[in-house]
Image (cartoon, rainbow over all chains, first blue to last red; front, side):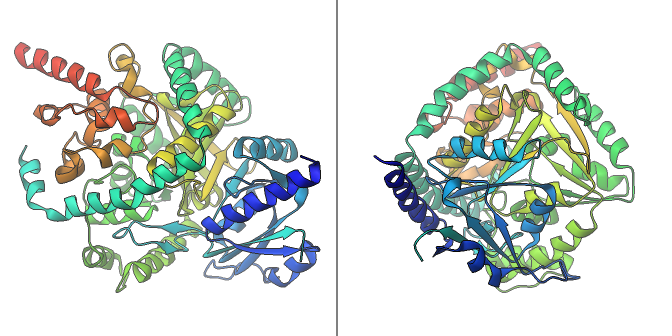
Length: 148
Length: 370
C-alpha cells in the first residue's frame, strides 16, 4: 500500500470512528479557513463560565478510535469549559492507533501534559439515559484536511 | 446481613443493574471485536502488575523521586487516618474542593473528613454527586446511582435547588450548579487510574469532562495514588486505562487526561497503602484488579443485592477481596456461589473464586480465635 493509500485508509477508519462517537465531521481542503467561523468570542469566557465555541489543533489522532491528542494546560481548561469544541486535524496528524498517536503527541508536546478527547461530554448516570454535555462541550466537530 | 434483606425488597437495585448490564454488555462485546489488540494487553498488564507487587518499596521510592525532581510534593499514608491528616493539612479549612470519582477517597472517607473541618467538598461525577447528596453508598463502582429513578434523583438534587423533569434537565441543572463550584474551587482532588513511574504521570479517564475541569481549573491539585496503580511506563498506563474503559463498555473513553508536575500548579501526590503491602502474599490477585466493575454486572448474587453485598466501600465479587484488604469483610463472603463468572469476564483474569476461598478461610480462623 502506498503512503497516499495508507492515509486514505486512515481517513476512512477515522470517519467511521467519529460517526460512532457522534462527532460532526467537516472535510475541507483549507481547514484553518473553515475553522474561522467557529473562533471563540474574543472577549473570552463569559461570567457564567460558558465560553461558547473554541477551536484547537490536534497534535495527533488515533484513527481506530477517534481519540485526538492535545497539550497545554490553558487549552485543557478552555476545552473543558467550552460549549462547542472544534478540532482542526491535519493529515500529518493521522495515526492508526492510540499508542502511536500518544507517542506522536509526546514528541510534539515536549515536557507538557498531553490529553485526549474522542467525543462531546456525556453521562448515562440517570436511569442509563444518555445525555450530552454533562460538564464539558455539548458538541464536538472535527475539521479534517482533505476533500471539500 | 440486615442490609441484604432490605436490598431484596428494593426491586430498583435489580432493575438498575439489569438495565446497566443490558446497555453495557453488547458494547463490551463490540469493543473487543472491533479492537482485538485489547485482549493482547490483558496478559501483558497482568504480568507487569504481578511483577510490580514484589517491588512496592522500590517502585514507591522511584515514583516519589520522579515527582519531587519535577517539583511536586509527595506523601505516603499507611492507613486512612494518616491520609486524612495529610490531606487536611494540605487543604486547611474554609476552602472549596472539587473531587472526581475515586474509590480510594471512599476508602479514606476523605470528603466527609474535609467537610467536618469546615470545607466545601463536592463530588463532581454526576452519579457520585447524587449519591453524595442522598447520603448513600455507591451502588456500583462506575455507576454509583444506578438504583435511583429519575423521580428519586429529582428529589435528591432538589435539596441543593436543582430542578428538572427528566434526566436531561437534571443533568443540565447539575452542570450549572457544579460549574459554579469548579470556577471557585481552591483545590481539585482526583484518584488515579494508572501511574507511570518513568515519567511521574498520573493517567485519568472519564466521559463527563469533570476530570478535565478538576485538574485544570483550581490552583492546587491533590492526587491519591494507591500502591496498586503503579506501573513502569506510560505505555502500560495507557493500555490499562484503555482496557478498563473497554471492559466496562465505554470505549474509547471520551477523555484521557494526564497529570504531571507543572510550574503553574501546586501538585500534591499522596501515595496510599491501606492494607495493600500486607496483602501481597495471599491476595496478590486482587491487587491487579483494574476496578472496571464488569464482574459486578455479571454476578448472579450482585444482581439482587448490588453494592450492599460487601464491605463498607467495595461490594460484589471484586468487593470481597478489596474489602478484606482495605477494611474488613464478614459473613457476606459466604453468599458467593463460586460460579466463576467473575474470573471469566475479568480483563486481567483475577482469580476471584480463589480470593473468596482465601477470605473465607481467614474469616473462619479469626472467628475461631474469638
